[in-house]
Image 1 (cartoon, rainbow, N blue to C red):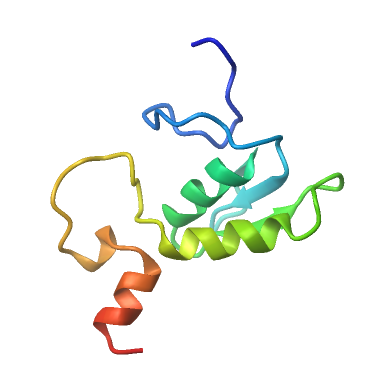
Image 2: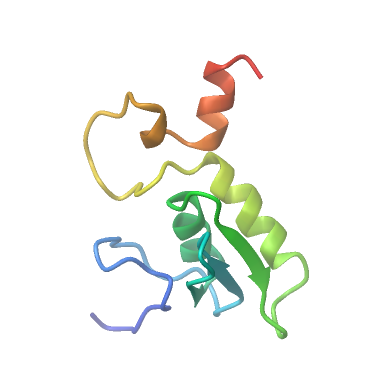
Length: 100
């Protein structure tokens, strides 16, 4: 790999970082990783009850952008295959299925 990626990038996710490390994404137990907005959103989408916080030098609204993007991203979106179970769909897709 030519360029190191942020700590939030999953080893199987082939996408490059989308800017500087700007957010901290935490799981339900408080464990987490710092990452760029792109990988932060992909990580947050893959967590149940995850949270995102801006780092002190983050661009304005970085955490809001990550939270908003994660809503439409499927968990582990780099994994191919059919997706029919609610746990395999984005939060937005699940809301649409439920008519909300």
